[in-house]
Length: 383
Image 1: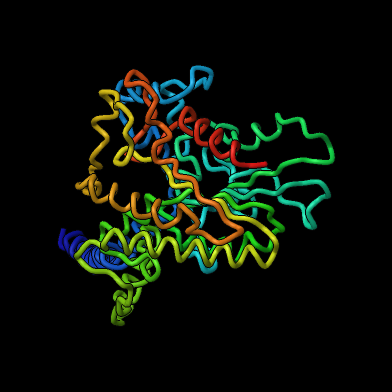
Image 2: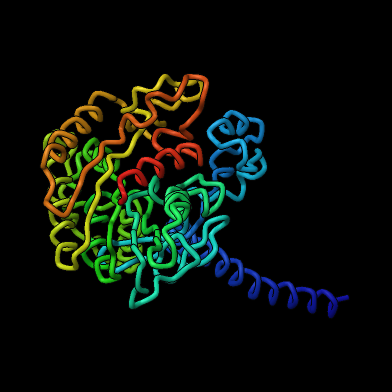
């Protein structure tokens, strides 16, 4: 009995010597993960994840009120929302900061040049081809489109194809756009990327993002976009966890709104710089001021009335956005763009759509019904 108790005590002592250090090690590892790894993982996940329209509208029955924004022949039902790309995964991209990650992202395909297209632009450009690039933010990307053919760029391609110009006159339309891009991102994309791909025409669908950044007090010529902010936070988390100080914030931002006249002037500066880059390659620029719920005079449906003020806290003052748009239109219209550029105000494009018809999915995105109307308006301006 004495020997048994002795062996029992020895085993108990051995277990304590093993289990206690193991428990302490596990606790330390858990705390280390929570302190150092999880914050980094969370921010990486925010940048790399792909969000679908279904992910934004989690209640299936609630999706039915959004179906009216889709054309009757789109084949979209409430379940299809789970495959409709909304916020695509992005990757760090030279000079513009970020752009869509190549590959299949739900129903959106991104090619190796980060364009929303399965085709790759041939270089040199084939004879007889008119090459068009569409750039902008998530509206130009066509977040919420049921497929790649029913995006603004896809509809523009099909509309131009129907002209029957023959083998000696063909059109190519490629979309290079990313969520939350401002006119500065678009200008850099034009200067550094698109102008090198033998474009004939750049279509820039822009405006609302510059006003959004203006409402936040950010200078679009020297500020971070929303996805840039994720990368900024990620680097600072890593620096702090490694015992270093966070980076100094040098962006031009304040708590005060940017005056609407300055929002317009900065956008005009980007347009002039883009036009100058395109003039070097004998290409043209056409800037389109995009429609949005907050600026439209459309008679809104009951569903659309609930979209006028975004839950994010933006669009709290519709008059600010209308003022920005009026000043942009005044600056860019009536000869306010260079000779190789043009400007069209699409802010009122949906004004004649009846109050019984949905167009918008949220404050400034729309489904294929709105994309088709925009593509038709753009096509009318192309010779």
